[in-house]
Image 1: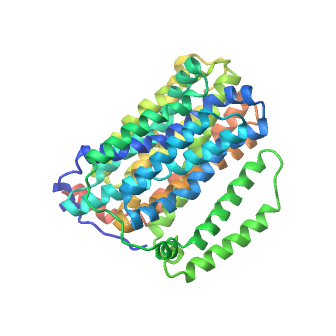
Image 2: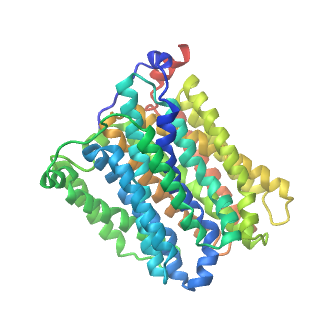
Image 3: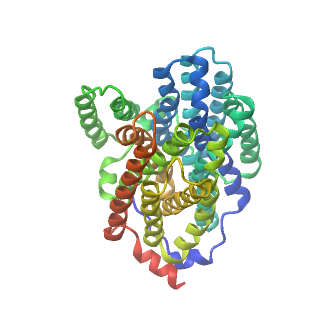
Length: 474
């Protein structure tokens, strides 16, 4: 992928992308984090109704696998067919999957509905980023503020999911996490249709044959096999490891790399990815960051219910500081990025992750006062905002408008692999029932991840510091 070097001093004086544009395209981006996070407090009720522990695991994982595979493809489809068209098509799939989930007579049907929702929610974020970048380039605007809006409505909402899910499930049952999608889909469709008039971003007149060729269907299928085998193995590690998936994964990886190196229009340009070290490093950093984040996200609500004896509503409300601080830290991170650049932004985020891990390992216990739990939750809200703003702005700065949708899709794919990897970490550190000792071991893992990330940020030569210097002196 080609790197684009913007004149940041000029960008400081440029107008921002209007909120009517950034806000409207951001509305649909909250669907994925809500659907991935509300399930954390709904899973007990789902298991009680369907009584299938093995199938219940797939209710969680099916959405992640579907989204991980679809996200890069959604960005490529937006570039081919038009970002807004693909965005709206994804909203329709979310609505269809939500209705199917409400009517699910079996756990298998519910898993299928989650797959539909996962595919649909994968389209919003990459194409929202494409529309924002397209508007910015067409009108000479700077996209930083719009990216902040997108980050708040997407990533910060992840932490709000358990709180909202706990309130909904406590009042209306687990089905409420499905029907809540419908008014959001309707509102987003109206907002994007009416206000996201960003011009013709992406899209071309192509025949069906040309579309198949441009999409690199073979590459997509190999990527599907690669991601699926990766996530299936990670999921199996928590119960009965499927070791034969390792050679399958290695074979598929080799075939995928070889195919993409020779493809005329590769789904993922592995040659360019190898050349674009800033993007490669960001994706690697994102994997470890989200593995640690989802250990917090999945681990603490379970610990609150198992060790503290809280209900879904109480556990959700206890996680509220993570969401509130996450939104505030996202706004602060945007200002930090504007003034000091990406290295300083990511340094704050990784330091906060390190401190949060140490606090989990040392002060969290089933007998700790509730104020201690709330304070630790507040600290854990800081790294989410800073790490997301830093990494996403870095991706935006090193890719072109045609490439950014696919790059952000890859970012999301790595995020969801990290979510499944966190399940392995939780199983290894805490087991199926998370007690105080297990939570402490998980906290030490998060602290170690913070140390590794901090070292990587401080030593990296691919942070675009020359642009940050210009920005800070403007």
